[in-house]
Length: 237
Ligand SMILES: *Cc1c(COP(=O)(O)O)cnc(C)c1O
Image (tube, rainbow, N blue to C red; front, side, top):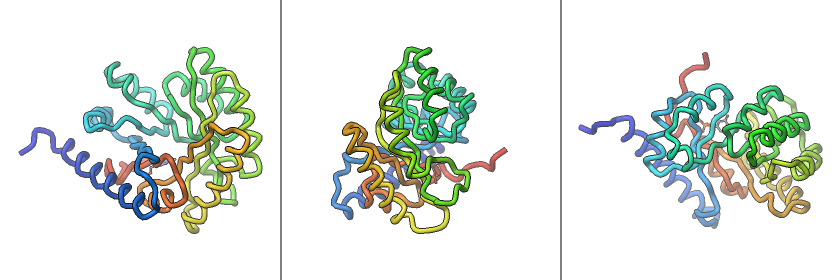
């Protein structure tokens, strides 16, 4: 019997997802080193973050400000320093300055007000934040966040001209209905448009537990995987 069954479970799930990514890369003719796996730990306790760190995970994703702040604060400073914390949830401009106190990367920048709020927050903390423009690929403003494709270039320029934010690229969630592959192909075109003006903005954050192959095939650089590693999330309270 293992002393930590949960640790064993996470190790096994993580290995399964790594295999899955390896296969997707092989099929797409891409190098595994082109992909970064972000393990989404939202709704799961800080102990799981520690276990994942022990297993070699260096990128974690969180989507709710209060939960994320508390979890990051609970980490041993040496573990915290060894992790990149990605904020991937919808942002309100009044919460954004708080997020800039602990996040390293914010994937969900989708309007000018958020750029200003994150920039001011990061400056006040004397931190630099990496930022991605979240793109709404649904075409129906279903409220999952994201800027419509027509607004992406302007938001990217705004981030690039801010003081404390560094533009890294674009992020999207595949629409619930419709083909993830098509959606990610559109994201990839939008990303190319951003790169034409901002050559360092090379990240494409796309792909979750259920659609990571499509994302790898479409050129994603960052995958955000939660339930395939941590298990199904407890219902939202
Ligand atoms: C929760 C979440 C994920 C992870 O989703 P899984 O299906 O659990 O892998 C990825 N991206 C965003 C924006 C999320 O909110």
